[in-house]
Length: 66
Image (cartoon, rainbow, N blue to C red):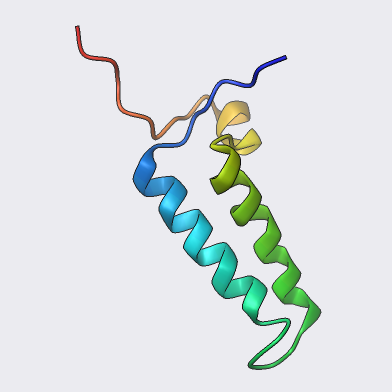
């Protein structure tokens, strides 16, 4: 079963970057386990699909040009 992507390129780049920054908090900085929350935006950015966007009927992908 293939999941339709609902994230645009900029959205994905921001999620991946933000996820890596949050994840780095488990190794540097305050060394808090809360940094593991960075896995959520990192994975959704890598996959290109956000379940919350699906639930809200939102997308950041550009519309197809005719």
